Image (cartoon, rainbow, N blue to C red; front, side):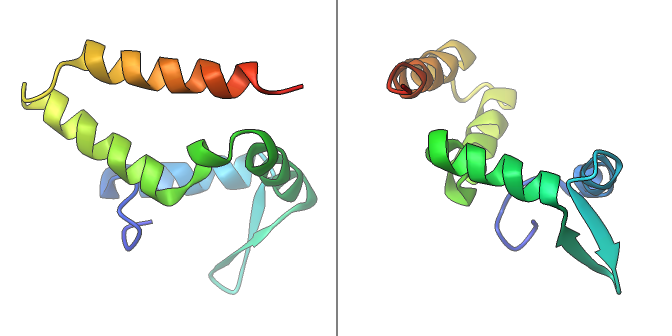
Length: 94
């Protein structure tokens, strides 16, 4: 996650714990191995919400959140942009 610029070091452990607790992955020999449930969720998200599960989307959003926390970017603008694009994506699902 760190190499991809997503998440925060303070949240890595809890993120991994949630993935294991919800049976999306299991840990074997210090590696994450996807479970059937995890594969199904990823297939669904990639089919219908591909943009929102891409690493660059997450990294870009986290950068914007940092700018918001530093009062360098208006949160309403970020939310408005996200919601406009997201509702368009959801509206296109048939």
